[in-house]
Image 1 (cartoon, rainbow, N blue to C red):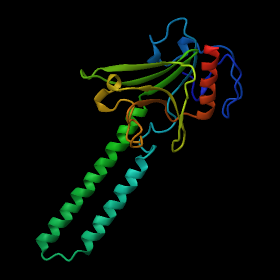
Image 2: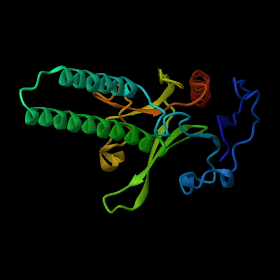
Image 3: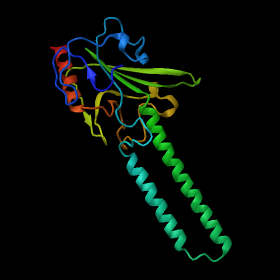
Image 4: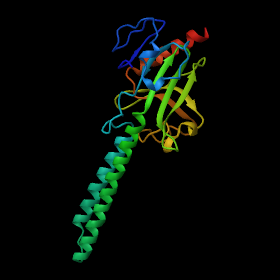
Length: 231
């Protein structure tokens, strides 16, 4: 697959990282193997991409960094209180310090779980755009521990608002919605990860091209493709 925000379109579009694009679709034999069997021979693949941020352990997303900082402040406070406490006995002091150590270890395990869960979800997301549809693949195991693809497709709908969700480094573009993500919920993660703000998936689950470069240009381009399809 070509790297970066690369796509082809029926119109010439200028992006901050790509001056012009040509009029030819991406050949199917140049796509990442993850897309094998997803597109028909008639599908013109105009763009493929992946999250640009959040796939590595230390690339914190959304509210995740707030949680990490809160845990760090909490650990510092409980250690300060514990060290300043006037213990009545040596055994009491040992018990207090052991308790503080357990809380600290628990906090670091929680930190590891949040960061690794987010990195795992985002490193298994793949995006594509054709002339009439947006696609998201969520790769993961199933209940038999075998690797599989969870493919979501979102045909372009007239007057659909491609909302932009602000991110820490790159923004995200909503391409569709799910009433439930049960069908793309391997091991309880699905499209969500710990970086999502509380309330983002209340009612419906937004399907996002998450953390992509030039999200505003992508939004305009998707709207243009939708208008051309329905006019």
